[in-house]
Image 1 (tube, rainbow, N blue to C red):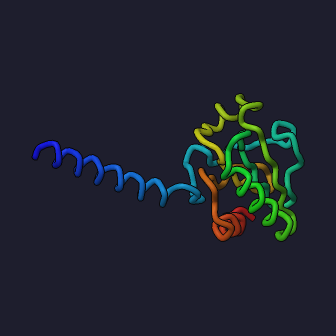
Image 2: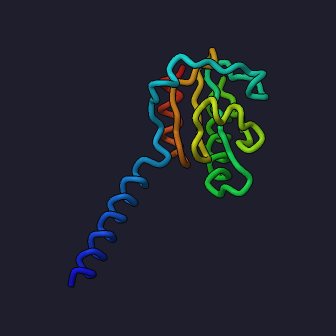
Amino acid sequence: MTGLVVCVAVLAAASVYGVLHGRRSGRVRVRGRDDGRRLEAERLGGALGERATLVQFSSAFCAPCRATRRILGEVAGVVPGVAHIEIDAEARLDLVRELDILKTPTVLVLDAEGRVVRRATGQPRRADVIAALGEAV
């Protein structure tokens, strides 16, 4: 009987963790220590957008990275003055460490001056990206 109780408790804890993790993944949110940090175009390997820039950290075998690339590319194509820069996390470990990138895809929303104003870990929703851009410009 004790084994059954332990098994049910473990399954319940895993289920709660899964639901919470799923809700947080892909959400665009403010991270306090990124406030005011500025990234230059030379370090990112591409030109910053006139109004905002979407910086995506990806890895080679990341399936959500491909979907994120498509979403960010579409948003950058529709919203004037917005650029999309994709960075290979494995090739740019210096930036990964500096910006505390823990998983791919991670998306940083930069304002016109290159300051990090929003961050999303996991595949973001198109509506969340557009809302974050509205706050960045």
